[in-house]
Image 1 (cartoon, rainbow over the protein chains, first blue to last red):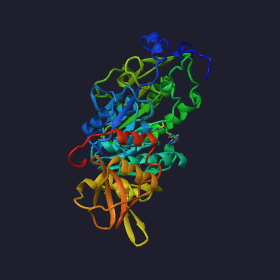
Image 2: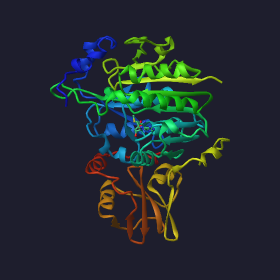
Image 3: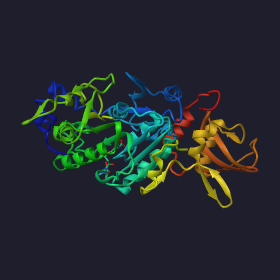
Length: 305
Length: 125
Ligand SMILES: C[S@@+](CC[C@H](N)C(=O)[O-])C[C@H]1O[C@@H](n2cnc3c(N)ncnc32)[C@H](O)[C@@H]1O
């Protein structure tokens, strides 16, 4: 634990986060438990009925029919529906990144930083287990939970690979690519009882270079006309808008609007001395006081035909 | 199970770790369906289905084997509880032997099973 309160820890962002004091207040509440119902194995209604009959209090999430918030549940991993792969415990914002990419059945999709596979299995669900997903992660030990999640959730259309994403071979081109990069994970920080916050598990400083390389390589792996989704669970503009800006400066990439109907803030116009390309405002910043989930950043980018 | 796509041959030149989902495992001279394959495709089966009460399923998972006669022929069978496909077991006359993956169940899952009183008609799709 650091000795910092949310106000202290996030003070560098006080000018960019709207209603900064509401944001800090929200961080003293625990993260809500969200369940994604896995329609590869059971219908939403079947799973919902089973859980509700056992007394679970489920609140549907507006506009995302496969996600429910479980009010009186602390250990979703112990549910029988979890063991049977009828559901996965996954933050709403994490589900949103898969929805924002919007793969279709039959697409050829790359998940460049895939482990432990929450989003890979969501992509398979959206693709109805058709087409092909190439799920890659740099670290062999991270493939173990990836494989076990894919198996439990009944994903049949996925092959797994273990390359450093920034050097992923250019022999195959993809219709859609998810670039869910390693990040400082500030969006997962919530206050403990004393409202001090945990230390992020990685320092943000070394990450932007890697994130830039991963995004550039992902863009180069897109089919003309293809789309990628860059996401992080951090608020740090150096890991978000600046990375997208660097792609725009180096490639013929086009930021696209995200067509979901959920509360968010636009991408930044400016950070420190950098003024970003105006299209970056079409990116989404997800803040917990606007949508009660892990803080996220989403950028949808197209490669023109 | 992959769709035909002109790009697929390029995949062969990459170092692939796993492909798809294991549907069958070879056990000596036999092919055993995996529990996850049955959970996905078992709803198409019309025979070799064993329906267990939650308590019986608990015994099967805990003791790995339960005694009893079930209306099916010897061999691998689909285990169903409360209309939900749980996985695979081996039926030999008078014996049902668990083939569930290890660590599939926790104490909480048993509570869930015992609490669920629903009786839905038909198997999940
Ligand atoms: C934010 S996590 C991905 C979470 C995952 N998409 C999910 O939804 O379950 C980032 C992942 O990137 C992996 N990673 C780190 N460096 C990488 C690299 N250079 N190339 C590919 N993957 C990398 C990490 O092992 C980690 O699993």
